[in-house]
Amino acid sequence: MATVASSHLLWLLGPALVAGVAYLDPGNVASNMTAGARYGYLLVWVVVAGNVMAWLIQYLSAKLGIVTGTSLPEILGVRIRRPLTRRLYWVQAELVAMATDLAEIIGGAVALNLLFGLPLLAGGVITGVISMIVLTVQTRRGPRTFERVIVALLLIITVGFAAGVFFAPPDAGSVVAGLVPRFEGANSVLLAASILGATIMPHAIYAHSALTRDRFPVVADGAATRRLLWATKWDVTIAMAIAGTVNLSILLLAASALQGVAGTDTLEGAHAALEATLGPVIATVFAVGLLASGLASTSVGAYAGAEIMHGLLHVRVPLLARRVVTLIPALLILGVGFDPTEALVLSQVVLSFGIPFALIPLVWLTMQRGVLGEHVNRWYTTVAGAVCALLLVALNVVLLVLVFTGA
Image (cartoon, rainbow, N blue to C red; front, side, top):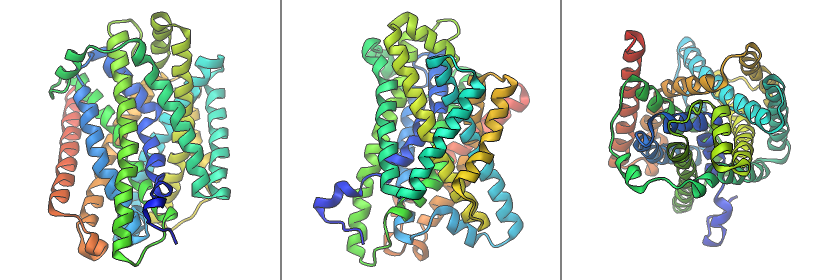
């Protein structure tokens, strides 16, 4: 049984760092880079607000897994009693998982193209194969070894995406001005939804409860559980601090070094502009970070997708077999020559529509004393979670109106 003694708190860290990789996937890079290049510091507030909301959401997901010993998909698979409703819920969750995988495979393919000149389709295949190797570590060596691999990739991602800011520091006054919530036209709303879809990832909500379930057995002692939840708050805080800093660094780098530069609303164009502006070293480090991002996030995404299928349909498909199947849509996109950056941004918009389906049940379940017992949410936690859900749903409604009215 896992101990919660003070000397072992460091050992308790890890699940949030793995889930937090979802907040640093290639979709984040495309959305934040595009936002900075097109609108400068305008959407800084979206990145900050998204990261604050993400802290609360990921903590609630982790708490659900720790206290109940089950994942969010498993609980929903039991509580959604009508088979048709449960299957429909699974369909939307599966579409979200596929959109996630699309972004991650494309990101890895673009990175390999930038680093080695490989064709995008070949890069997508290689990214998928390497992700299978990482998933083999998870299935054969257990969660701790899997965490170490993902955290190592997380360090590479952090250096790759944050290094450029030190060579092109942002304007402090403009950063502060960017904290004021506002938009400039329909396209800025689309990018805001894309940033939030990339920041608050539905599959990360599903995955975090499963990661804590796998890592920690249910502890009967209430005091021990409270200690474990306290350590989890630190785990989530560290993970979200890293993710928030890196995401903000990407947007600030684009705003300070790439705004107004032609072609910087694509990953390839941004890489070329970074090379021309800051030199080949920074551009190469950026591409390495993008590759690590694709490899790490696609592995976590495959783990989440398998958990979604198992929990909602009560079907356990081997991770590697599922990995092969979910590679197909991404490889088709790469094969037909669809613009990879546009595909990345649109995939994040799809993710933003999946957020309420994961977030609303999470908030509802964690406010139920019959589910969490003495660890049920305090009233203000539930209010904060409900406000997050309402804001995200409202943004998606506005986005739908803008899209269907042609605004």
